[in-house]
Image (tube, rainbow, N blue to C red; front, side, top):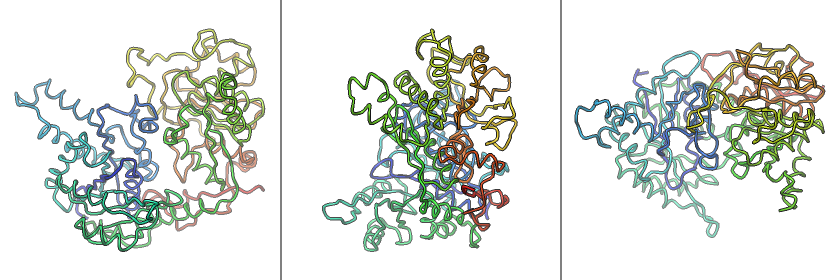
Length: 591
């Protein structure tokens, strides 16, 4: 294969939120399964420097990387699909580009020239992409060979124009055989006639061509498979061969998308178009995806988890949390049911204002097999979360608290077992949760404890330690501004509420566990960010095991899943050369 980096630009048309992220990840996945090293860049045309200050209702959750970068949730999809570790510079925003160009201008780097969008901003975009594409993202530290670039938003948006112009120039700089464009478009199917409409796609492609980019593949998002006549019509009006029109219809599981693309010859097309000689032998990694999707389709047993949060109206607010629960449910062969509960509805004030919502919320909470309180910010809804934690503790329901969820578990125990008074916002709760030294109160962006930090287990008999394979320490990603007050440790431990994991200095409380409870665990870090389909996150796996009544059996077997239903030996791993044996993901029986 030629040593030149291959760039695949994924653009979107008609509407945003069409699934570009999953398609970009899937294209990367099928190329990685051919033995190529793949990296990914997400471009967001908004002016924010990063995603750190967004409300989850704006763009979904904020995903945190090893280096502390707060980025778009699509980078979470790339990491999970491709099993890679990205850095903050893999998320490029208009704000970052303008900031770097303005800083150069202030230093005098442009030697008195007028600084303009073309060429200065567009050059900066191209330099950023070329530099970031070379950064190794696999464990073996090899420079990537393919870079998938996803351009957020919709073609034609004013704010994405400089990026489109940058790539128009870029295609000539890197030469045609090293750059291709995949355009993702919507094929609506109005219920009145039931026929698939191509006009929005025609308009979108025409606009893209008018801006100087010709799509090599048009990926059509539709609810049902694309009819042949529709495919031919798109081919005729959009200036592509029928084989370049790919149908990406709705599927039962996102794990099926790579298989869908593979079956329509996407790998063959890309290898010819980008001059990449790829072996056509049966590829182990895709077998793994097929087995994973088949297995998720045939699950019979159910397990329900109550997710008690404040952003429950928009499921993308908890995208990684839901994925971590799904990975764990799949590992134990259960179908996951997530019950979203707005924590404010659990509060006594709702009983007065809207008794129906109050009773519905409590009915959901009481009927769930396990309870999860994820991270969050702000005071609204914290009392409701404390009520949910109290219910989980007293009723011996499996419970996992993440970040704020762990801090509130400490507050709940302090209030109801130790008898301390006060709420999360007042100092009278004996300062159970305090501000951290890193926090700069004058500024909101980038003032938290962020990124990968080490947690050391202080005891041998911790349930979580066993779930992590009896590790002495774990490296997980953090995103928090407050922490549990370490000076109060002894008051809690006397009553069986143990701080089993602490940071390297022993000053920060990282993991809590409660004695005499099937599973009551809180973690200060966000384990969901490193969960993978084939390697579920241990705190979430523990919650699912306990909720399905299988945790004790699992621990007694030395944390081994029994061999029923394992992935076959044909299912290769996510890195081309690693051992297949590591990837066996068995399920559990009630032996």
